[in-house]
Figure (cartoon, rainbow, N blue to C red):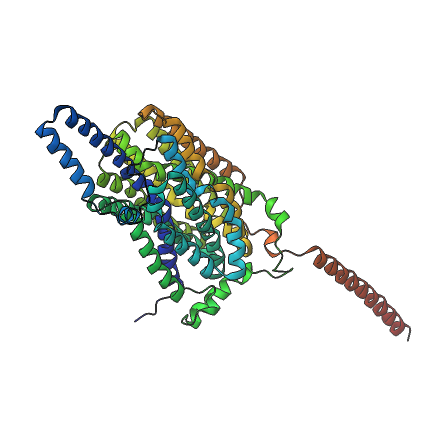
Length: 520
């Protein structure tokens, strides 16, 4: 029986880790739909109560009993606890579109702050600790979200802000592991593990929809906490920061990885010092930042707003909303796998240069996706067209694993975590800017015309960033990946000067010796 490769196991654990990471991000996106529905139900009960007081009709009292029974049929541990300790709480969430935008965007307010620290900490302490703890602590905080929501939406905003701050360490930390484990010609395929985020969305949206249908929305957060804990236990047992630390890796696989990565290892300078100036002055770095900005604006707009869009504009129930919001992300993962295998084939067969391949992938994940969102802006009033176009737009974003995400490792494997941290610091900003923009555009105006403006802005971000990347990027290994410090450069120059002087003396002595021999 063939032995399972260590990096295959690593792919699955990374894949599930990113699924968990996005589970934390998107759970509020769908539960808020049911939470705001609770507001509508409370208003309906109030209306019926008033009618009962005025008419004292039997039919009205029966209808009131029906609504009350429906609301009380779903057990809430959090409500029971708050009642037990006599703490007043908000039973029915009276949040307008602006407040909903704040709640949905709060996760990303401080998410950018820990992007660069995530890469630095992973380089120092290892991805295993940083990525693992960032994910599991974010999951444990899920247990507190229902309580925070019932107490005050501002407390919920602060809790989501802390969640975003902590989980912000995860993404840049992973590139450090990728650079140590994955040969250059396998990176496109391995980085598809990052799109476990898509499968997480595709799986958890419908799962959470069914949970809310059969139980209360609070159970979504209980499930998140439990699943995250189980993943973390497996992660701590099965994952190691480098191949040499892995106790069960075969010698053949270890030799193959070491041989493949030797060309990109740091060979000069001090590995403890980071070439910050070179990184911030690097055009390829900024092209990757721009591509990530556009891609994340598009991804987060569609991911965060899809449940509300389908529920409000197309009037689908919570179960259908969950399924149709998750389907596009499943297609994104499948497309990423197919495209990455095609990309690695082009690299291994030398049919396309690394730079041109990354340009092709980014053109697909930004420009082609932007065109789909543009079509959604004009044809999304049709429910079928909305599903098809949203699915295609999200699907094409799967090429990002072969585009800017892989390019970051290509240009600087020694500093991939830090570069991804810089990219994430700026690229994650659409995570809270986009919900704010949506909240402003749709405040008291939940119409297709207002949503058209949302999609037009999204399309412009995608297409613009994709065009810039295609024209100006470069995915070759950068000279500062194996840098020398200024002191090292001086020492090297001294050694070179001494060497030149010695060679000059040798030539003079050799010439004198030859001349003497010729005379003798």
